Length: 90
Image (cartoon, rainbow, N blue to C red; front, top):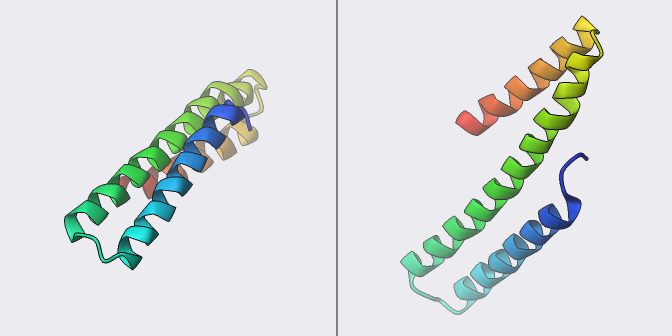
């Protein structure tokens, strides 16, 4: 992985902590809107981690594929990225 692994791990651990907190909120029968807000906060952190990894992928793996002058490799990397973008855009 080309992304800053320390930063990505920190984000994922934070999201995990928030999700654990959401589970506790559910067990404690907390107010629905408070639970939803915490879920959205967790989702935002996961999105931030995703963005960090994708930026690094584009600046690393995609860039390397174009420096290789291997058209098949380039096309593969483009298709991988487009597939991820399609999933994000849904």
